[in-house]
Image 1 (cartoon, rainbow, N blue to C red):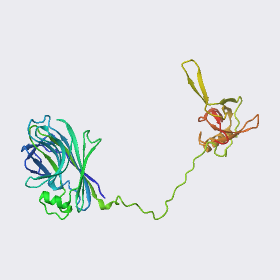
Image 2: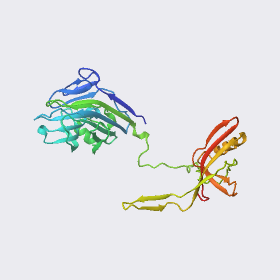
Image 3: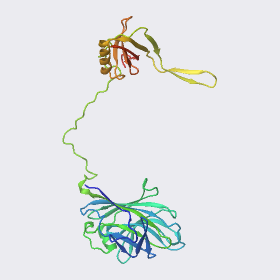
Length: 358
């Protein structure tokens, strides 16, 4: 399935060029914006060829245009502006009745004689001078044409759904005067439509998105079939105590500063007292280690340990030099190492006790 976005920004000066076929009236341009000049009731410009949806079926495409309404609505006269598609027979536009008694988004078919058959409409009030993006997502099937209409008042950031309509090929032929066996027989070019009842509406950034043949995608009501059970790749996550495979073999220098860690939650009150709640039931000891003079063998062993435990990630064991107790600890921060003389290093680090069931 291919996706192609084609843009027509009305960059040429003067009237619309040879790529467009005007019906019922003429258009002119203001910078990159197109606007109708005649007549007062209906003007339509349809691209002769591209952008054109693919010819296979069923297919799905999107038609969009930015509409800037007249700076002031006329006292009398209809205001209309929007897009056409399905070869110029389908219309999706904003319609303000003469005098403003009704304001609607309307989807209808129009035949060569000018007879219009409305399929769906929704009342929406838009302010004079405001800019709105109209969007029609269209699916052409062998039996019908499904149109999902939306609009955006913030430049396409968010869209509001209006309605969903699906006239059949039979109904469509009757309304347009065509003799189509399927929708595939019609040109799927699109264009713009507007009228002049006073200050004109401006149209800009006409866009067509072609999603290609829907048959290239699995049906939404067909679940995929698994031929074999999917394989899963196992991952491992180190616990804080990873089995104590590593040991600190280079004893730190004296003095060994040690403090007990008890996490306490405190909450002060207006009465001047403070409520405290213990956040843990197991004591954890914290030491400030320092090594005053490590030789080459010591610094190599120390570096091997740091690499094996990946800094602060994993725990290791340490034998207390006075009590002989084997204690599980881990670095609380990254050790700092300094070369203080020829082949003499100093280091310091804070380590924290890791309970056996951590």
